[in-house]
Length: 69
Length: 247
Image 1 (spheres, each protein chain N blue to C red):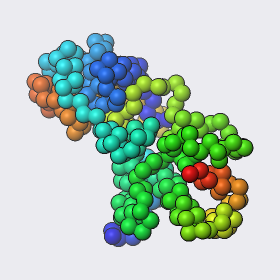
Image 2: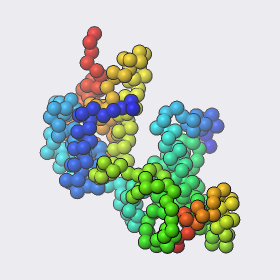
Image 3: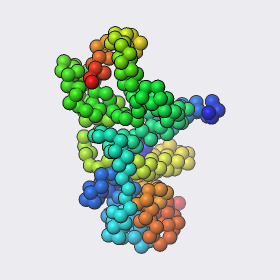
Image 4: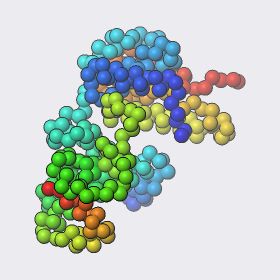
């Protein structure tokens, strides 16, 4: 891993191109991880309510977003 | 914005998309942009290209022969309707690397522990990813809180522009445009006086041409390799990016 100073410099880059791209990429990553993790939780028998509690969103919201299959 | 496209560069980009479509390509690449500049005899970039022995017809044949579609990988990996998925993933991987996240390692860990590929449906929201039909059930009484803004979308990255429904820009082309934009910013930073800085030209045909001479894209390189002196071409294009001197 690079040294911390260099990393934080990129994360808080004042080049909007770089900073915004990092934000977008983090969102894409979070979205994908959420889908994978919710599916895994359901397969392990978690209730929608339990998943919603951890994600701190409403049960309806989780269900609506992930209930297909 | 700092980098407004001037008329020449706008025409070049529009022409590039038209030419890509004519050639039956699904992506607009740097090669097409070069053709777009060559198709406009009134442009400053055209003058530089012609001075170095390039012409539209020859160049078009070269682009037709050397254009590489970056999408085939994504097409094989899944039947997604978002053909840019693979390149989106690669782009996001680079962006995350800059803040210390190794996306490939995360992907590897997820594959090992959960048996899923993160790159599948990358940057598409669960609601409207791949198989629309099988989620009808979940959506029947669905109040779309996000409203109608994100349709036919790229997930959280927002909707595709409705004004533009031509072929997509390739990763290499986006890199070229970024390069040209950065050049504008650099030039502006050199000028002390703010009012003066605002007069530094934004995106011009010449700037696009300079950026194109630096591209690794095979089609663009094939065309530029036929130029009589690539260095000279770049120098002439660079000179054309400077505003007319009054001193």
